[in-house]
Image 1 (cartoon, one colour):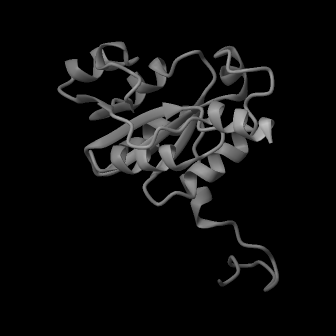
Image 2 (cartoon, rainbow, N blue to C red; image 1 turned 90 degrees about the vertical axis):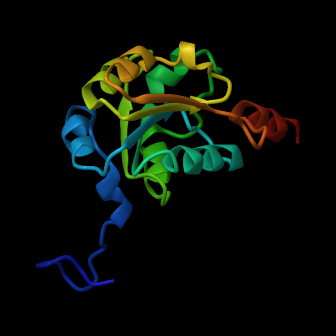
Image 3 (cartoon, rainbow, N blue to C red; image 1 turned 180 degrees about the horizontal axis):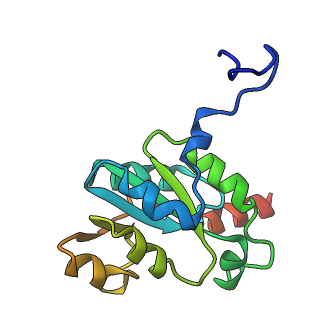
Length: 171
């Protein structure tokens, strides 16, 4: 891989996926530049597993681009998932998420819900996992009022980070 212009030949080059990382205040502008219909989903995505990557690929298939908003570390802690969560920091979770081919943009939110971010980005498709009935998905009303779709994707692989951590702890 060639070095960046003006950099020494042995200077490290930032991985291309880092261009997918985006601060919340820049997310509406960056998302507007993506192909439509743009799909939005959110979550902790602490320890990425097969259930996560299957879900994300299915979400991306519902549109032409995918934006993923991650709960900040403080937001994850407020969800009551345990004192040791998240296992991975926001920066690490964002990097892993951005490295996925199906993901076009990664941002975060610090509040308890991503409602303000969803309203600012105005996705054409809003998606959550099958444990979320459509009527309980945060931001659903605004998306449907704008003519968008809200989808709850059934789980194919019954996996969870909590169950994975329980299994690790029992070893």
